Length: 593
Image (cartoon, rainbow, N blue to C red; front, side, top):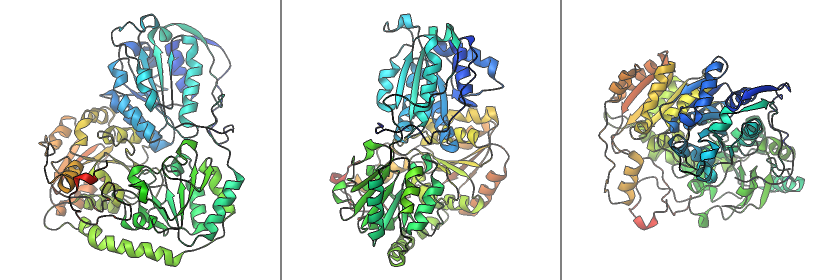
């Protein structure tokens, strides 16, 4: 996630600089005042010795800056991620030194791989004790270097305002990402003359590459000549707040468009040019026809392995156009015949001006024909499970039928793929999920963060019985804040995705995947959260209605079919055009991820 090229920052939201009036404050107060100057309203954290001076000052600012006490530091960073993803603003989390800081690392790595703007503030031991193996001392900077966009250790109070300003600028600008500021205890306790100046540029850091007019012209020429073009929509459209520009580009070009998992909801799923989701468990038509299109236009996506599968067979017939803000992604996985560097909010309108309006009725019919095959063999069976059992897809469809404006937050596994495949989206930022890292335990705290960011929208967490138990203690946050998060636990009494792979590729040797679970409704009851458990399709629709109409937090446990599989699937090592619509032959040698 390295930035290059030269241009100042035309698209960053400019915040007014704080008053130039000098105040003498402690470093701890400088941290709080810096957050307020950046417009931060909520932070997620967990106190401890090395960050205690900051928490002591925070007590005086409770009416201006709300602190949400999580039950584990991993919950703090996931909540900050959910807040950022739902709002488009920077999420903030706070932890103490040692284990408090190290407990953030999984969430920081998740934010790094999913380009989520998060500022993490950690306390550190006194500067005089650094390097002595003092109590709860850990070198969190070296630990976090691989998974942060930037990190910095503050050892004197005077450094705090500039470090905080830079942290917010780096986290949000260009391709977003997490930043960590480690602040020693003496820096929090010592005094400084506080003046805050927002950061708007940095030497050697150019987060917004200047678009090449030649590249735009070459891209337009390829699109205008194309007979079977296809657009791949990534999260960059959402991160760049370019949904309107993308829609205009798409409708002028007439091209069919498919989405990555993280790109979902950037375009309404009922748009006539939308042809489905890409990837290992994506839709049959867009995956298959990736290897038949003549021009492939990738917008704000990174060609990760779950989209491309075996690169040796990926879109070799196509001319590839890659619109991307991060130069390090160009040619990293897939060669770009034309690379259009820049913020897609700027490059999409410029490219649109050069396009001739076109339609591709015959080409779109190819997608429709293949979708009909998938619908017959998979979709209808998923939505209408035989007998008296519940399927995951049916639960998602019941949400669609009863709520069309929810933010859906998922964990990782079969339920995640079912949600991504079957959820209907009408507005952007309606899906929050862990993409690159695939973090179990993400859902519940991320849903909490999303609800704090968007109290005006329903927030529904969809989680498996495995993932929910990784961060289940965050139900305490819902209890304490009377937070109206709706949590659906799809309980199949298995680690479902691992079990599916064991069935398909490991001769049905279900090693350590069956689960004995607690009574989740009793757990919810102990937190004072309304709850219900169902195990029959006849009860599903009313249960969803009950959950949505309840004014507060709600846990709905749904007992789903134990050994349900998610299809289609691209067998690891195979081509995207070789999707399996049913169980492939077991072949452990093909395992690639």
